[in-house]
Length: 153
Ligand SMILES: [Zn+2]
Image (cartoon, rainbow, N blue to C red; front, side, top):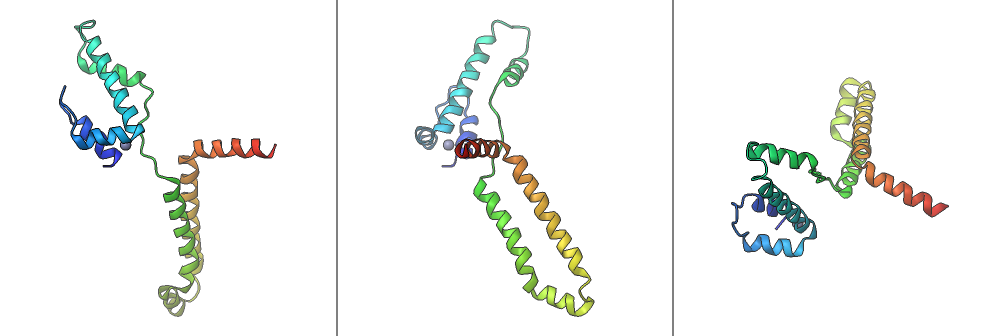
């Protein structure tokens, strides 16, 4: 079972309902999901404990307050391997497009004027992709930089 499926299944449970066997097995084996479920359970306990203290406020207000003060970040991470694979694919296409039948046909029909457009498009594509790679992995890059500089010192 994947982590997303496990968390979705857990969130779909009714109040007090026991999780299915597959979810419990995943929680037993996956520390990340176990930690997330423990944090959620602690938030739910906080919500329950706040209910009698603030009878006039709605449950939504309590939930929103807890979410505002929560340190949990919800984001979908793309693995470094996926990023690097996609980057290599773009680089390979820049090289391999030189041998493509479409390019050879375009050379024969309209000459070599389209080379600049093709090169600029692929250049812009790889630049945007590299910028996204760097922006989405700043923490990992900073960590790598810190380790690199402590290593060469
Ligand atoms: Zn998991």
